[in-house]
Image (cartoon, helix red, strand yellow):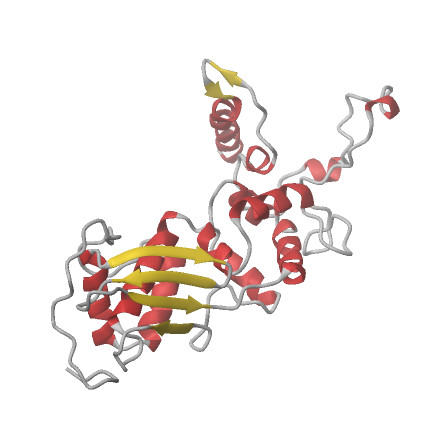
Length: 285
């Protein structure tokens, strides 16, 4: 085992921790969802395999005391063989307000992506949207700035590796943490998507293909629509099948704000969703 920067050899066994963060995965690889696996694949491509293996052991043993994620920065403390825990920092570039305005507009212009995000899902195509804006979603080989206060001169050390694996598991549980690390909190993003309605700066409610977004309908005051209130207000050409054959049948329910209505203590949208899916199934039959 190589010596540390101060010439000593760290003991093979770390000090046992009570109440540390333990990885849910007990064996094999860590990361179940596509976005967390994407992150782990980057780590395993650029980091030393032996140190990553020891990091997985640390993560499963619960040696990480805490883990805090904010825009551009993950902070953690990891208990090693010395009495004082080591401080770990992992940094990436957090995008600013202007960059997120561009990203939000691009995501809002794609009705299916917007609907999936509003439903709490992370569509795989979101990575392409980021790339098209010239703003990568995941850090590349040189996109991670990592440091640990331990004397180990290898990189990344097992303490950093443990934090990176637990970060991947945190992404598993909440995909919006990937976006929060880039500088956009979940609630802020979803609120922005609800208000964009598919509009992007300068396109006036157009989708990426230059056609009106399927959920864009001009809101007209009731007093101005007394004579045609029950008309749809939408061109018949826009009432046909969605342009994207992969659009979910309950797209409208996902994209709009849910009404505060319940029937037998069940939210109205939960009652409507099976009917939407049944109608779609009959149409496809």
